[in-house]
Image (cartoon, helix red, strand yellow):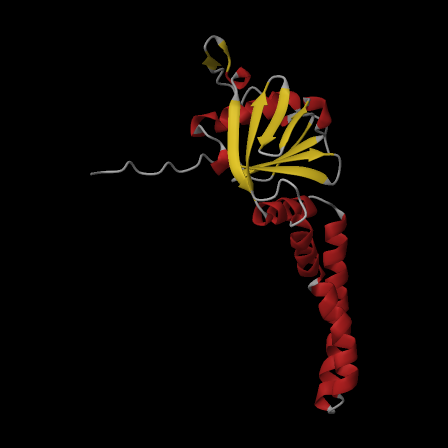
Length: 208
């Protein structure tokens, strides 16, 4: 992968917004969400999709399916159900192994001390500041190795496996979504754009 920062091009982020005389990304950006098991599993799933070995596993699954299908059909046709069952059981486990892993991860999430708490993350020039009723953690930008941009959020990596999922819908001020993009572009060295980030749809005003 090229180490060139895609955001360095004049065609991207060319609009130099300012907030009170400072660059737009210098403003404090807040994201608030409920840190629950669904968000945890989503973060792990998106992380899993970024690893190259995932493609090897997919190819392996296809090869297993192609190789065993003629035998299974033949045994079922001959009434040999036990051999068919013995060969399809481990194959089915291979195909649904990620579902089992998700179940294990959900169980482990129950032991998280900050599980099901309201989490507020502040992004600023100085770094990443996560606050909840049971934690107050500050990280400098050098702690992050990569950011992946999705249409509905940002996946921040601390090394290859530890990730933080920031949904676009959690950003308190929707107008700051692109400011956060600019900040991440300036502070995190490696970027991958899977989808262009979209602004959240604002709720219609209440009418009496």
